[in-house]
Length: 382
Image 1 (tube, one colour):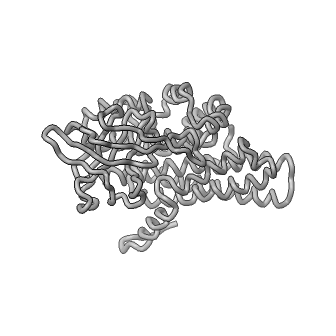
Image 2 (cartoon, rainbow, N blue to C red):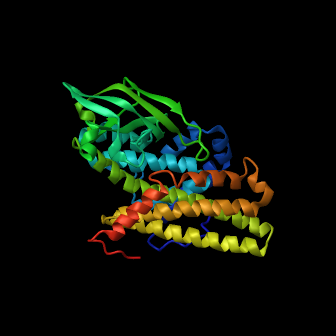
Image 3 (tube, rainbow, N blue to C red):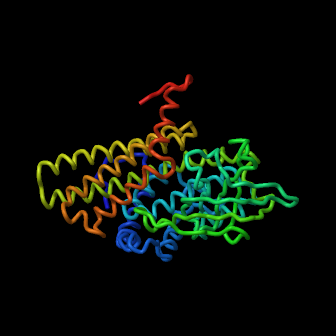
């Protein structure tokens, strides 16, 4: 489906977008309602995602990936989210906060053992940072690890973890001593099936149904020394660098939902025109266009190798709000049909409502932005 919002610059990743758009129209969109209803992405669609190379986007060919830039990635995620937010989030988490950290921090042996299968889509990647009592305060982790003669032992739990049921790899963050704060946190590569590692429950969510969200238990998980990702004590560096890239990806997913809600609204207004509906449509168009510009700016800065964490937070903040406001207005424009369970408008609103909470809440993005604006060395630009 042709994008109706904000034509892309001439140097845009048009080929990846075309490929993803065709895949969505052919495979994803027809299954979106079933994915939402069953709270599961069918295995055959996951296999198709792998064969199309979407799990390898951003990973160099030398490690089994398909290459591509951050702008390629956000184009793909926007298109996937236009069809199914659950599928887009699954791919975004897999690449941004699991595969890419292994690419950036892993040893050659770790990349060979874990990254290459991830790039081929042989199991998805998961990111185990959040805990029942430590969400936004990542330095307040309670999952503990200790050194042993041949490696490490870990005890604790994780909450709201995406992709863990189907994971081939989970990055798990634990602290040697909570009193050490950020200096005590390290990152570990944990393959599911490791003794003591289990999925305690799969959580039932309002939106993004089909995207696995779980509680993990780590009860005496024993890991070899080579499971440590990056230097010991640098776990939050691994996490925060991954989250910055992850926020660009999640912003693109929110943008895709906002765009889908806009296109649904456009179809409804064309079918039953009214002046107040035209006003809603105009506002929705402006919000999607602004969100796309911010997502693209963050991706461009990431590709250029310059600081982009603040841009990622701004993009995530604005795109998440746009998704919620447009999806909500879309229900109004659809009228009584919009509140029916299973309607596109109803599903998009439920999906949109999750984005202000994931990859750092709206309040966290605002704090990151304010801190950046007030930093002595900061020279804010718009």
